[in-house]
Length: 143
Length: 120
Image (cartoon, rainbow over all chains, first blue to last red; front, side, top):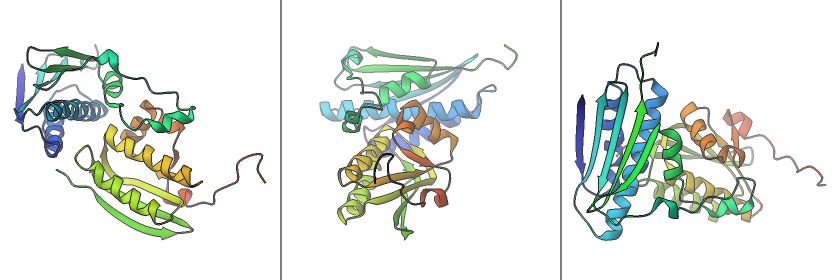
């Protein structure tokens, strides 16, 4: 296994750095395809955005930890924050796109996007915040 | 931060806002400000050209949805120029491909607005 760990201040200006580092690391997986790297790039950006927002709302200035690990057949991304936690089941589902009320929802797409982009997506409370683990499977082509 | 850059032009009765670079939570406010300024000036036909845009997150999508809402409030129109598979996938995953008027070229997006079926 190889891994890269990044600790960033809870500031949105660091999102581009997180995307660049994590997508570059994921690209080192010998079996990953380009569109899956794009999926990881977006998903890690969404997760890190949520982590930063959580810490900002809690007034916490501790670093946010972002880890990207390459394990046989998997790329694993962890985002750990020390902000106020939340219950993913509290998310308000968006109306169907055919409903005019859909235009009233300008936020709230991040978690549904992560769930669709990643092969695994788990949000877990920790003793001091929230941990998000995302996994992309990268089996060899003949698997 | 890979700052987004914006361009503005007017052609064939449409205002064209070009976006290049990455739009995320850090930089989406700048896009929002541009859209608000354009719509506040009375523009009712806006083309958002994303051909040079490298990245959009859900915050950026919210800005685009807000732009659509703002224009529709004034009986206006928003068209999006986008051929990048990554961004088109994002619109598809969120269902926004069914809400946004997405075109494969600027020429296509600058076409006339046709009356809705059943209207005079």
